[in-house]
Length: 383
Image 1: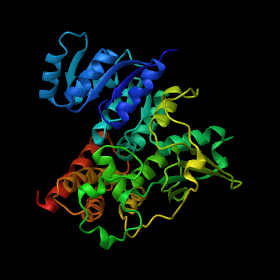
Image 2: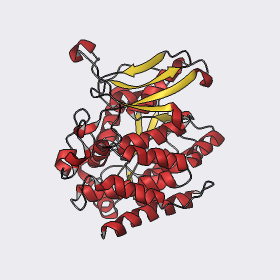
Image 3: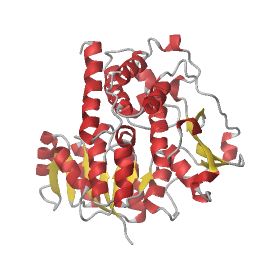
Image 4: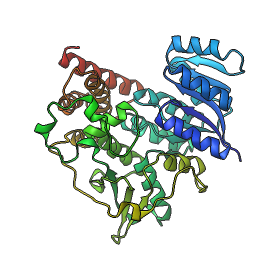
């Protein structure tokens, strides 16, 4: 059966690579969404002929509508338009690669519409938690991970006889551009320094999250929800080469890992072709090209954001949503040169601790916790 895709976040790094996979396998691209990049999405429209496109920015949507007046593509805008794309009748799979909390609501609506979810938006599970997983179970919807680490675990689990056979999961982390640095050495690093990732080509927000290792903390929370693991059974290991994308350990202490070159098109494609495997546009891994693979314990004293997330999921309730919301703002403020790199973890922790202690929460509670955390950061910084 031919897959028909609704791609949320088509102009970003994951989105453009997802289109590489769709192009290679002839998948139908029914919907595309972006924030405001009219030039890139116009080119995508002319190649893939989607039926519906959404730009979050209203002015950009108006400009796009004028530019593609010669096509049959309908243009919508804002959250309402994003949800329209996420629930579009002509698509059977929603690949959510938008960045940030904006991805939560369309994911929930896509699940209600019984779409298969290929999930690259970590905030959906970090902030939404049981709202997302419980709804997916109720609707009989599969959530297939696209993050390289969670895809690696998902792939390794295909050989698992049952859930009880898994002892723990291991999330690998590149360590980012500041691996080996101490906290005092990071006091005055710039955004330009933090954006120099050694292995991956990603957007600015995710690259800064990699530099602070907040991304690994968020992935820790995401892994808990995706794989229904206890916090103590999720381990983080720094692996500089980004060849081992993650692993699982069975009860007999056998370890199964997924390896590949650092190219997101492998996990993207597996989410779209699952349970099949097909040729991909990614080059074959040759271990001899690397010579050796290295592994280290994370430096929790320097990269304090990891423990912010671990503590948030231990506290549960709305604390993960608050940690994520705070990080979206502190990350942006650092990129704008308004705070120091070392301020990010402090602001994230304080905002997370300030969250309401509510375990049985609703979507509106999540959105309120997110807003409160963002405001807390802005007020603390004086912006």
